[in-house]
Every structure is written in structure tokens, then in C-alpha cells.
Image 1 (cartoon, rainbow, N blue to C red):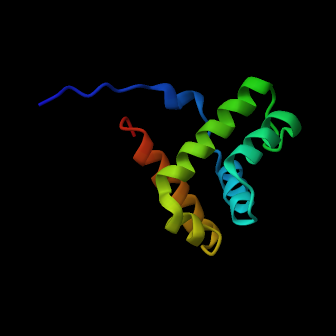
Image 2: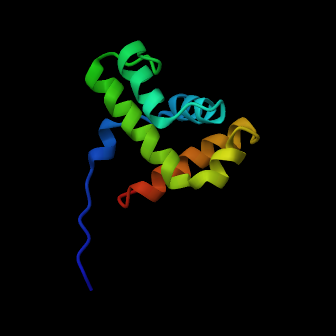
Image 3: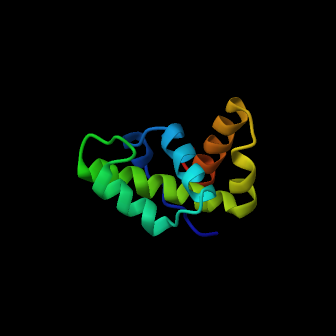
Length: 99
């Protein structure tokens, strides 16, 4: 059995529900990941306090959305608010073994 390495890096991140939802909405409107990244860096669409935080927010939202897959991304905006929050929590759980 191999040893797993755990990291407590998640404590520096927020839940970022609004940002993840905004990212999925932009994807559904036909924007690409590259366009969203550019908007995050140049226009601070996620309202980050600094450029490094904007990059971190983008990366976290991007990873969380990718782990959900295309089918869940398509379904996400049709869910009610509570189920959307649960979906984002599931994406966090899938990415962070410590959770």
C-alpha cells in the first residue's frame, strides 16, 4: 500500500461558490477557459483583492469545474441554490483528500 500525502493548503482557500458559479455561467455562454483566464487577470471579474489572489481564484474555480465534468457543468445552472452549493462542495471533496 502506498502512502498518501495530505496537504492543509485548502485552509488558505475560500469556498468560492459565487466565482465557480460565475465561471460555469461564462462557459455556458460560450466563453473559453482562456478567455475567462484573461478576463480574470485583466478585468478582475472575480473581484479579487490582488492579482495573485485573482490567479488563485481562477485556478481553483477551473480545477473544481473540470473535476465535475461536462455533464455536471451543463446541469449546474439548472439546479437550485442549495444543490449548486452541494455540487461545489463535492468538487472540493473530489480535489482535496484531507476533506
